[in-house]
Length: 310
Image (cartoon, rainbow, N blue to C red; front, top):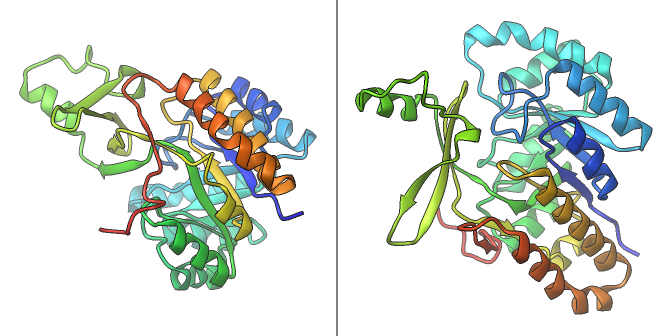
C-alpha cells in the first residue's frame, strides 16, 4: 500500500473545524487577515488556540497562514504573533515573505515552516533553496502541470503540497480598487460593503465567466471563475507520493466543504488501497461534486493537463 497524502482544508469558523475533521480532513489552514492572504475565515489567536486543542485531541494538524507581504510597519508585530503561535503549539506556519522565516528562526526555531508564495514555486531548485533556509514544505504554484509536479516531487528535499480543489487567486493589488471605483461613482463607502460577504463579480460576457472580487486590509483580490477539481485524476500524484492535497474553501459554505472533504477522503483512501475500485468509482465522485457546485462556477482541471504558459 502506498503513502497517503495529507488532506488539508480551509475552514471558515470553529464550527467548521470540527465538521471538516469529522468529514476526514487531516489538517487545516487558518489565520487572520492581518498576516495571511485569502483565508476562508478570520481566526484570532483565541480561535487558533481552540482549533489547535480540537485538532490535537484527534491527532490532526493546524497550520497558520502568514503568507502576506509585510511592509516595515508590520514587521515589528511578527515576533509577538509567532511567539503566541509557538505557545499555542500550532503545527506549522505558512510564509511567503522571508521576514516571517527570519523572525521564526529567532523566536521559534523548532516551528515547521511551509513556503508558499502562491505562484513562484515552479521548480525543484527553488523549493530546495527554501529548504536550505529552513522551510520543510513547498506549496506549489497552481499554474504548473502534472508532469512538472511529479518531477518536482521526485527531486524535492522538502514536502510538496498541491491544491486539488477550489478557486485560485488571479490578481492582487494593495490598492483598494473597488473602493476607489465607488468613490469615483460618488457612492457612499459606508453603505457599500466590499468584502467577501458582498458577493461582487467581474463579468466577462464573451467567456460567460464571473470572477469573484473582494477587498480586505491586504487590498483587492480577483479570483478564478472556475473551481479546480481533480478528484478523478489523483493516481499520478499519489504514486509520486505528493505529501499534501489541499481543498481551498474560500467563498464556500461549510456544507459544501463537508461534502467535498468527505468525497476526497474516500477517493484518496480508495486510490491508495484499491486502485481498481477507485477507477470504477471516480466518475461518480466527480458527478457528486458537480451536483453541489454553485451556479456559474464550473469545475475544471486548472493547469494540471495544460502546457504551462505564463
